[in-house]
Every structure is written in C-alpha cells, then in structure tokens.
Image 1 (cartoon, helix red, strand yellow):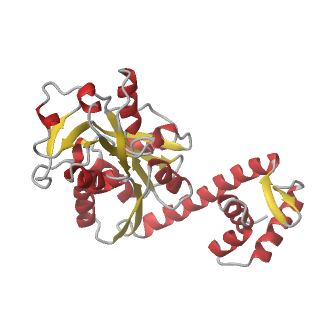
Image 2 (cartoon, rainbow, N blue to C red; image 1 turned 90 degrees about the horizontal axis):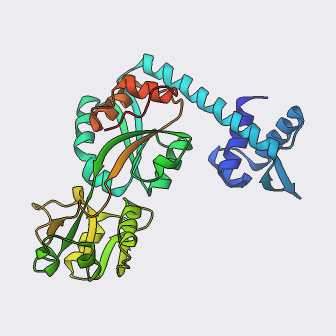
Length: 313
C-alpha cells in the first residue's frame, strides 16, 4: 500500500467513478490507475469499487470505509507539507478563498486589499460559486477557506465559524411607490413583480419563509445569482428587488432608491468554513481575523481540533 494508491481511489471517487477523468487530473494513464486500484484491493482483501464489466459503477460498503480513511491520511499528508512550508517561509505561499458573489463584491475587497499589503508574497486566489459549491471546494482541497451564508452551517465535515450578521433591503426605481411605504410591509412588497436571489443564494430561504408565514405568494419574475444583476433589472423598472443591505451603495447606485427591510426578515449570518482538523499557516489566521476580528487564532485552532464552543457574534 502506498500514498499514490490512496490518491488514485480518492480521485476516482471524486470524479464520479470516471477513471479516465481521474487519470487526467493526476497526469497519469487510465490503465495505470486501474492497475493500482486492483493491487490495493488485492492487498486489502476487499473490493473498493463495484464493477460492471470494466466499468466502475458504485462504491462498496467496505470501499466507503477505505475511502474515508484514505481521505484522512491524504489530509494529514497535506498538513505535514503545510507545516514544512510554514517554518521554511512563514510569509510566502498561497491562500485560496471560495465565496459567493455578494461576499466577493461587497464584503471582502477591503480585507483582501489589507491582506495583500501585509503579505505581498502570498498568492491569493478567489473562487466564486453558490454556497454548496464553495463548501465542496474546501472539502476537496481546492480552496482553504469557504465564506458564505447558507450551506456551511449544514456540513459536518466543515468547522463553522460565524463572522457577521446582515439583513436585507428593497430597491426600486427612484419614483416607485414602494419607496414611500411607511412602514414597509410584506403585503406591500408582494403587490409588485419581484426580482431577487436564486434559491441557492444569500438567504433566499429567509425571504421565502417570511412570505409563507404571512400566507403570501409574491410574484417572482426573475432570479439571479448576484446582486449586480438584480440591480440592473430593477433599474430597468422590471420589478422591485430584495437584496443584501451590504450590496446597496447610494454613492454608486444613483439610479435606484432603497428602503430598509430588516424588520421583515430574519437576519442571516455569514460564516467561514474550514476543513475539520486542517493545519493552517499563520497568514491564514491573519486573513480570518482581518475579516472577523473576534475570531482569534487561538479560537480558530480550538474549533479546528474539536474543542470550545460556538464563538458567537
């Protein structure tokens, strides 16, 4: 048994049992991957993958256990490399952040600017996706940190650390009557065509819950994956928009009016997600604290090892 074999079975599982795709990702040949998997199965005395002819069709029950152990071992190897890099050069390396459009566009720019000034030798990568996708990027090792609102809280393989609470506002063209509603109500919002986030994004569940709780069915005419798209179509007077309050800037959004809607919806919490038991380099802790000052290195280390309690906000 060797680490190469563990990487092969891990990558095959990640690639939906497609051996060709796994071989391409690992820069090797399909026959070589298949041979090493067979050798590992022979050594262990169990089949990791069920087959139909030469094609892999499922992960067996013992295979699930083997894959779980292999993933832990590969993570530990990655942690060992991180330790070596940390002490070889503590201020150089890379940091990959997976996040949603709203966080990347409105919450992170100042934090990233300050971080790059402090750590000019660190290569920073920013990946965008929906909350589930950004969690998967951290779990499969393609990102170090996930920053999102929804899915992080639901994933047992990630350590969840709360960062900020935020709520929503309603935007509309400047002369729209919704801007004069005092107080703003869900009934008033439901009377107009509505443009808001896609179901996978930015607290959409809290929006749906609020309307359902009042027995209302708003006419959602358009959904989008980011705030800028919502604002574009609202400015064309195709409907009113519900978006994250942080996404409205009166100095920039001069073609829109805004009314706060925090009293109508539950607040949402932006969270950082980290792979459980990951070993982080010093500058990663610095980035986290720059984004959420209450998340000190000691607090994050304690959470990663399974100790402590939710740090709260």
